[in-house]
Amino acid sequence: MIEIVNVSQNWAIGRAGQLLIHIPADMQYFRRTTKGKVCIMGSTTLESFPRMAPLKDRVNIVLIDDDRKIRPESVAAAEADRAAGRTTELVYVHSPEEALERVKDVPKDDVFVIGGASIYRLMLPYCDTCLVTHNDYPSDGADTFYPDLVASGWRMTERGEEQQYEGTTFRFCRYERK
Image 1 (cartoon, helix red, strand yellow):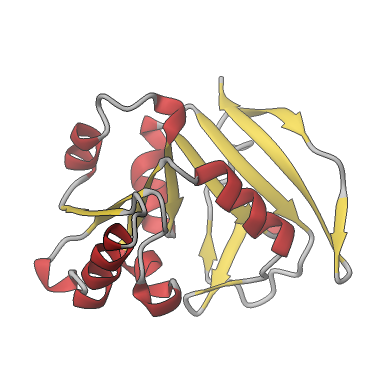
Image 2 (image 1 turned 120 degrees about the horizontal axis):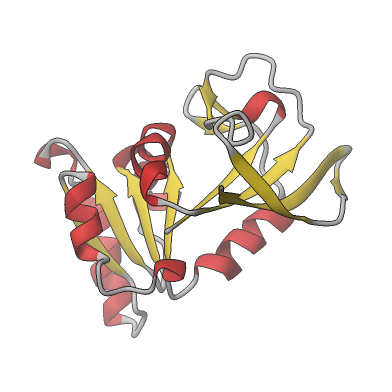
């Protein structure tokens, strides 16, 4: 499995339930990389999407600890996508083990963990690759962080070209477990 994340300074990923910065090129990279794949996420991540709709043309596996977190709006959006001919699926699971069971026959490079922070931490032991967009946006006030892969013994195997968006420098990187 692969984790995909955008991190600012000090591996910061969010503040008050929101991303620190939205970089259009990163969003395009995310869409292009995960389209047609399986995306594992938490309920808060799903609820952060417009209209709480699952990601189109993907299998959305949502880890929940309580069935009351199943959102009728999300279920209806997935049904509407399928009625419109899309391949959107929405599946709720209650544990990392149940998520792993759901993807056991899917090639590991077709399964992406997309957040939030607690889901990243839960699923990281099962991943061997992380796609990290590093940016230099100030992380002042950040309250949510991704694990420091370098300190955890991962190695960067690809370092993309430096790019700019509205004064923020970013690059796409790939990490692999040593």
